[in-house]
Length: 427
Ligand code: SR1
Ligand code: MG
Image 1 (cartoon, rainbow, N blue to C red):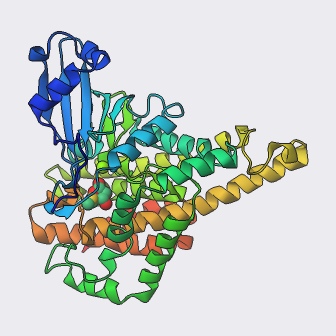
Image 2: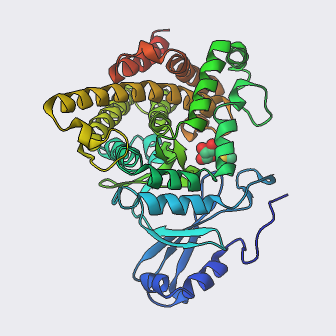
Image 3: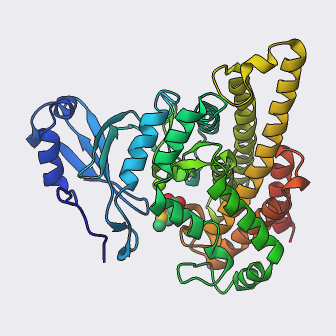
């Protein structure tokens, strides 16, 4: 059964969408011409929602509507509609900080649970580009910039605690999707749950091992606790490579419907994990060995670019702040104060690094053993080959999760990933 829907809510289709947009003069003007001239295409390929692209003679729009259930499962998994509201609020709250790094918010309809944003063209989903072996030189850097800006600017480093507490209170109501994360990311993969799936029987031994590994389960639970209790900044909440759209010259972070206040390392870890799964899946694709190796190295280089750019910008943005209630600027004006603050900032970044590795491990594990898998592994038809590559990813994930302290820096993570894939070549 889908959840009951309020009056005024109807699942959109092409005709209903055109009628609705025609009733909104600003939106109709963007499309231009007459409604009969507008082309509608439903392109949603995520797990949850409908996504329409609408093109008119003078412009385009993207419309995203919540369904009262999980799209990929159907009505047997009901899901409240409010996620559209939280995505809208996230875009509204962060828009001024991330102009050019996220789509422009154009409209929100509270009755239809639908948001309208600019149509990004000729963009495509980053994950799909990576599967095709395309290099996007600025993408990882742009996503790092997005995380650094939102992490500092929506936190008490930059704002009064009243502003932050009020905003956090709004997002603390994002119960449905926070529950999805609490269960699918931090719990399900570590015990027997009907939603889980994995490449079986090839990975059965590892699944059994993980479920008996108290150290691993404690590390996962500890991060789950951090996710639910540490309100460092407004998070995107689902920052995988399917939540990023790219063209050759532009990168935008989309889909912040899982938004909540939480630990910044959660967003960072999600993106690092998805770059790493792209790396580990490489041998599953038909490319020459040279090409595979070169592209794999490029993916690893982007892990470094991502972390290093984030760390550098987080440091700069934090130290440029004067208006936050945390680390009041008045306390650190003198040279000794400035030195102490700079050191403190480096220590916080070191602790964000450890968080990032742990959350990356969690994300890899849930994408291989949980409900929502990654296309880069799923599209490898040969199950033995796929399982071998997933095993490498899981080996790194386990280390990241249980022993993040073993990695002195991001180069250590990259070296470990490389060593795992070379073991396979040598074997
Ligand atoms: C039921 S939703 C499953 C997953 O899809 C979304 O993209 C999130 O990653 C979520 O965990
Ligand atoms: Mg999404």
